[in-house]
Image 1 (cartoon, one colour):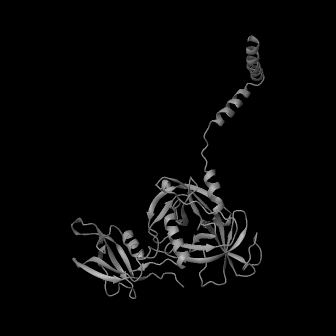
Image 2: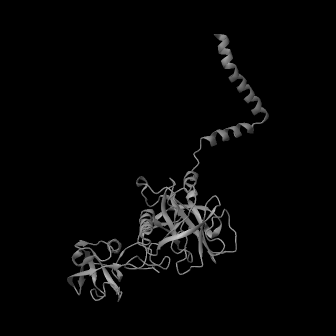
Image 3: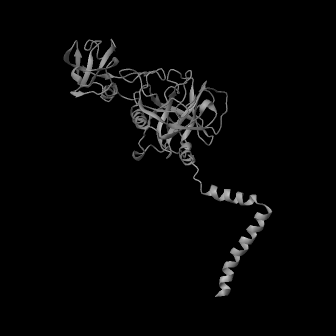
Length: 367
């Protein structure tokens, strides 16, 4: 028994003696060993998992002019005589080749001499065809014929966005190649007024539900992915404020809105929305603290509201339901099928009126 015990203890004794000798010769060796052991137990924060999960689904988008030599070909690398006129980013939404980018990135049908290309993270270059676009949300849908595409994971319900969440922006800034920046969610449901020369949608001309982030979004990040730390898409990067002494203010279109718009474009080639034909003059409080209403600031002379609404009218209910904000009124009208008759309750010169209007189709940006 003593023999076996000696055999078990001997290695420990030898190790201690060796350690004493090493420390005697080189006292700093102990510090080095301690540093190594300590570093093994340190938890190093990293977003490498999220990037590795999402980055293969983010592509570089190139617009070339003239549309020559490349047409109808799938190339592994760039070549030919076409000149790049615009570079941006895109996100693979479906493995069968549907890619989302920004409307302001792609050429319209009025620019037939330009071609769009999508370059995968692996460097493979494919011709992309414009399925359709939606100026109201600054979203365009492209289609490529390429094998083995990896669709990005969409934001799950258990990862609902909150102000303060860490997010990563992946894209192709200034055509440097795929780049990752990080920041936090600064705000949600921001208005898109004036960000990219488009105002609010339907009543005005643009977005009402943007994500604001301080993750750097530079020229070329347009159409790229804004992801959470789980590697899920939370939005499509669309614009940033880069004015004098202004930084850290970027915007993205939320994933929920992107998927709805993409589905409409794939199904119909466009997003079908109701159109009222007014521009608002902001919200105003109603008498007796009954909530708020939207004041009419301008009326499209050829729109559905012409002759039925007056500048200065304050709309406070739609089909018997009170509205709580301008955003709610916009969403209500936009979600209504063109040709539908809607009853508006409004204040005009201090008196309530009921006005029925048949909505037209919102034709903005259609060629």
